[in-house]
Image (cartoon, rainbow, N blue to C red; front, side, top):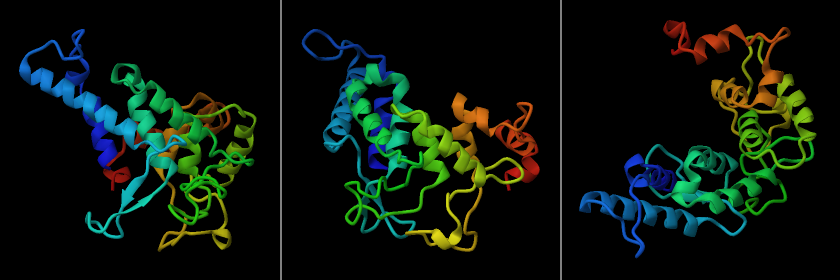
Length: 237
């Protein structure tokens, strides 16, 4: 969360709009210059906190309070960082930083085309910063959209698996395995919920979206209603 807040600071329109003079200082009023200098400092902090393989670690807690935080490595936060920053990466001086993150994410796509929250079972997180968790639709769709990598042929396999866990109304369930094959998951009262966020990741990628459409190119009516703000009386509850 700390890194995401830094990222949002870097992406402040006011900060990005302030140019620097030849001596490296901002050419602007003192307040704007301070904002621009702070944004550049935040960008440097993001770069400095990036781990060698191209990922950032995430602080998490066991309760809804930021007390006794621990660190983990997850693909979701890293993909979101790239998703938010990509439109202004050059202006923020983050092009190389995000490139390394994309390369890391692309490497998390496994031989079956799926992606896990903590990354590959043989990755640096396992046993220290994460566990061998069941692949999920959310991270799979998000990583394929953000950093598809060189092996696009694996997308067909991934889409077929996502399709197996699609609900009748066009949404996708979270976990890409039957319950008796869950690993490192506390399924709770709803062992495999559908998530409109997953559907939105798919809708934003042309190849993913092509599979997500029903025969004849018609998107699930329920997804369309939620995505475009209709039927709020029922879908937002």
